[in-house]
Image (cartoon, rainbow, N blue to C red):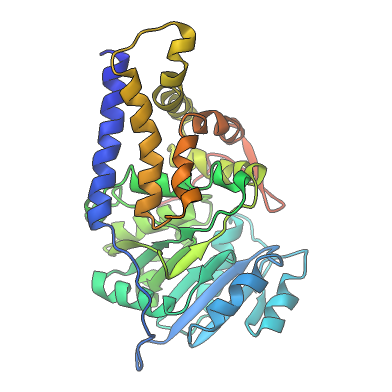
Length: 365
């Protein structure tokens, strides 16, 4: 099959998924926290988060949850003192036991400590706006889910963090049609560990975070294993209720994404290589064709579609400032900027927040 036919098929398929998600993907809308509702525990695993907590923790504390617990996971920067000064209950995490990765162990400890009927795990860089807890509880009930994960709205400010960080939204909204995510099959599942709201009883029945004790991509794997055990999983876009500022620069984005890219590609390095090559062929190569002296039917249309895709992702995710919309212009260079991520992800070991992990050692079902 000709190159341009394959490229058009790729872009057309992603455009169809974007259209489906523009219609069907649930959006959170700020709401008052219901009176007399379930007891809610908001749980924050925190390792070296002193720079984030002053900006994000006050919004979490203002939600009106029964308890907010911050687990200090061996921080070296005063995370525990800052969280305590801001008014959260702070617990010092236990040392990492053999056979566990950092975040699953922190979340497992939090799930044992929590007294709520609803457990909401949220990262320290996630911002909760007024009405966010009411929005999460409403969507959890409306979806009749045992687990609701939220895709926070990206709050990218500097040019460096705009280069790769918006690809989080692109990966979800252009590859996973929401009606498929709701199917009972475990493989048809995604989740975002930045915000995960569980019915505690369902999490305990499934086996808790021990199910993903050796997973770097613990969020999606936990959702799949919960669904495989009869649980129901749903997702929603954070929009005006919940936001996040993940990484502050391009190098930080490269380091952060590289720990998850190989698990996303099923721990297959050949698939990782194929993915990098395919993105270069579809988004970058059409712009190089005139330089190379190659004539390809529809090359101009390929360029236009490649530019529009990322703009469409931003609009669906609720990112609508001029700078957000103009991120679409990065489409041709994004595969080149992502190459360092692929190269780091192909290594046997990755380092994140001072801990070293072997690649390709997933947990067990």
